[in-house]
Image (cartoon, protein in one colour):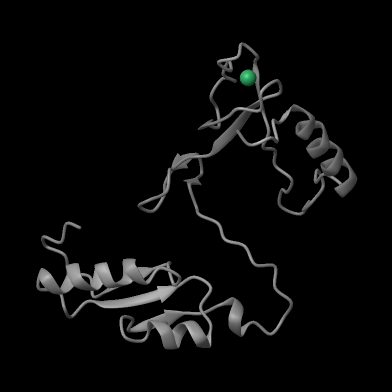
Length: 164
Ligand SMILES: [Zn+2]
C-alpha cells in the first residue's frame, strides 16, 4: 500500500467476511503513521457482523439487512463507462466476454470485442454471455428455465464428472 502524500481520511473495505484483511489494513495504516484514517466496512453487513467487526471498523455500509422490501441480492462492479474501461483496484476493467468450447467445455475470458478464440482442442470457441436487458426492455431476451435446464444437461453430457 503506497501512502505517500495520501490525504484520505477513510478507506472502505467491501470485505465484511474477512477479518484478516481488516486487521492487515489497520496494521499497515497504523505502522505508516495513518492511525487517523478510519476504516469503513461493507458487504453483507448485519447486526451480528457489526458486533464482530467493531474492534477494527469505524463505520459500516449496510444495505440488504435493513431493507424493508423483498430483496434480490446481487453485486456488480462498474468496469466500463461509455466505452471507456474503468474499474476499481482489484477488478479487471472493460466489458468482457466468456468464450466456451462446445467440445471440451474449456472457457476463456477476453475483452468484449475480441475475436472468438480457437480452443487448444481445435474447436472454435463460442461466446456464452449475452445482454438480457436494455433500458425499458428488462428480460426481453432472458432464457426460460426449461431452456437453461436443457442447455446445462447438454453440457453435462460433455463433462467428465468422475473425479480422478
Ligand atoms: Zn476444446
